[in-house]
Image (cartoon, rainbow, N blue to C red; front, side, top):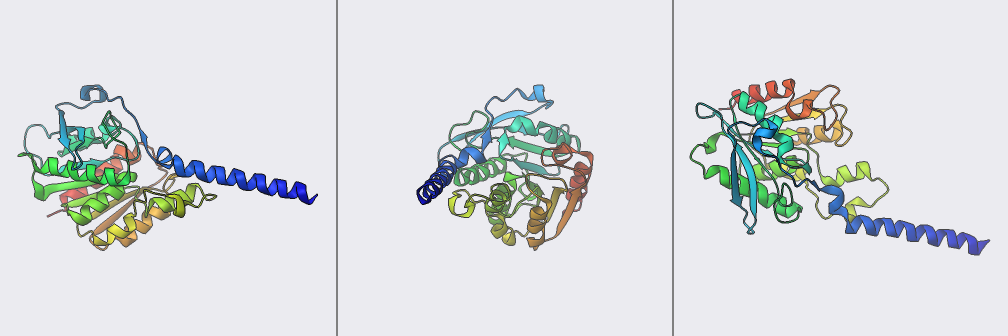
Length: 274
């Protein structure tokens, strides 16, 4: 009887160790979901988009679309920092709406996304965000004093980290989270996430150094990043801030991508900036 019980214990321990080992080895596969195929801009509703490339500090070349405001110079240029899945084409509805409201937009893909070389890591994605900012500031049609960072989901940590080092005129965060550790613990409570995780994206530490005005969006039905986590980030902001909770919105709903309430709030927010 004792031998049988020990056998069960050993088998269970081996199974748990196997699960933990799998999570350690393949953790980045569980975090990043890059899509490669990128259609042409007109195929996703973007008119006048310019296909661009720019280098990163570690020697990679990233691809993107610069979407200008037609007719006259834009009041603001929006740098979009994507979430962890898809590619820039999936953010085309946001760029279309922002362009319609009179703003310029840069959509780009991180390393490993949208056909770009390299593999996504926290360090790499932070370098990619910095490279995108440098590219925008190299353009004659971009006013550095009117640059806006817009981060969605995973991209909110990148936007916050970039804003702490290189302050923009304003920052928009959609479904922000305190750290990837807390998100992981929410979804994998049976794993020692704090010990395993290599890419932590500790936005809650960086947000305290942000000095620009901040607009936060969150859905009250978000099943990926709970509203309570987005509120924690919002509460930690020490600069001018505004929180918009979208009723009934889940993480991947259109209302949190380019919904009317979201675009109206963005336009109002940018209109109040100096």
